[in-house]
Image (cartoon, rainbow, N blue to C red; front, side, top):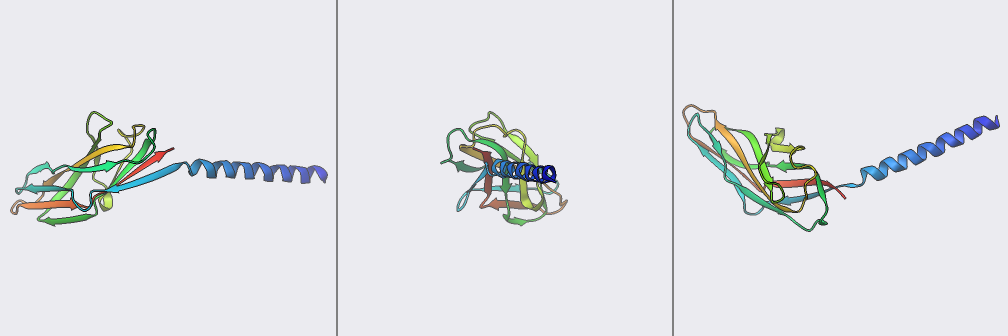
Length: 157
């Protein structure tokens, strides 16, 4: 009987230790959100049946510790105005900490997640964004503008 109680006590102590460690590991991931508001947008005007690239929006991320590195970036382009039938294809992003552009397919709900190309780079810096689109109408020209773009940087520290 004593062995059974000792084993039960040992099992409880191991479980408490494991759960505490898991909670600690999950709390080390943090986020930082910045926005282009009130100015700054990505705008695109296209003739019928054509594709093209939007203007570039710039978002500054600063104030984080210098050695913080990115684990994921989510861009929320939920505020838009449009006329016509422009389909958003891909979103492109670059920071002052990488040499070129990184792309991702346009996300559902106008939220696009970048999990490759930025991971492990420094989080502080200037981020530039633009998107590509196609006017799927064969008759009417169109435009689409995304404004108040929100950039959420996930990082470990």
